[in-house]
Length: 392
Image (cartoon, rainbow, N blue to C red; front, side, top):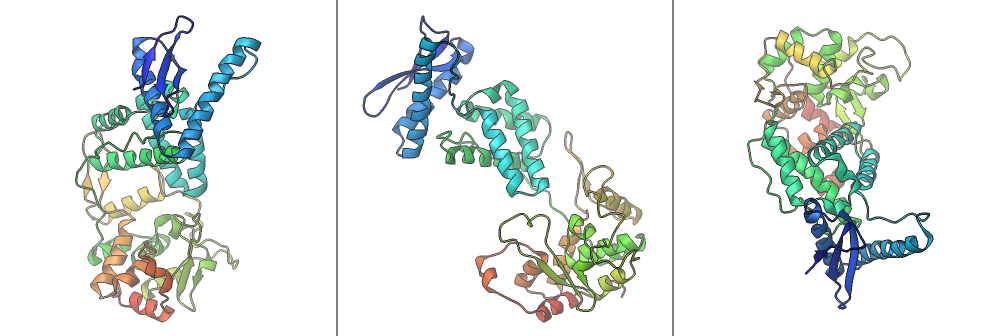
């Protein structure tokens, strides 16, 4: 069983543990030999002992090499002085930077920002000093403290679950790289609770909303309600994405365009949407001209973003956004621009469009058989044309 001892020749806790071959190891923990640091030191000692006993050769090799390098460095430093740098176990800060860089390259910008924010909140809870400690310093009690902090701030169980899952992704990556042997989030019980969900607009609400829209916003709303586009995708469309003669919109969703094998989505244009698009002013004949020059470079998020402007139109139309506000939480609105995607899917479902076609047209992930299923444009067009006109 791993243990600690104090040494008259060192101001740090000395970790003592035995490897499977019976060899007794004594290694400096780098933690001051004070009661306040005992838990961290013993946790690291247990981590190293577990690594020595685990059946994963890569994990043993990784920890052993780092420990041997530290021990050798200690001896060398004793001979040649402080001119040789001492190798260290992977610090939390280094692992965080590597993980976030990976997310920046493989996830959308908004997802990367969300992951980075969760990590920042977690570091704020456990203290910035932890960044200079090994990743294995993080224990389940730190995750529990983070959850308690989120609860104290009034964050919903749904938000807590999402943030712990982000941390789980981080520690699973550290485990895969053999930086740690145990994921500190694994024993954590995620909180339960009702998840807030978006609500679709009714046809009458859609008509009321369209009545308060200018031509550009009318087209944006119909791109959401009759083609299933997200606000960022709709506002960034150019004329080369639209083929009025074939009545087709083709685009790559921003949310997935960075992923390997990302597929473009081709959606037939509903006759109401086609009329709205043809009524848009055209400033240039160049195919790369934006459909919405005023909005194409504007972000959906933020107090002055497109989402907020859409919310103002909802209020102007006299539609209840079903806002829910709890102490310490941001206001959740059940009817936002994203609700138009729910409306799109709902309208198709109410008009007997199959679930498979609904998933395809909305760009939702589905079963693997989707790869082998190829529908004709005519099939998709029938699905879109099944949606009644909002002008009726």
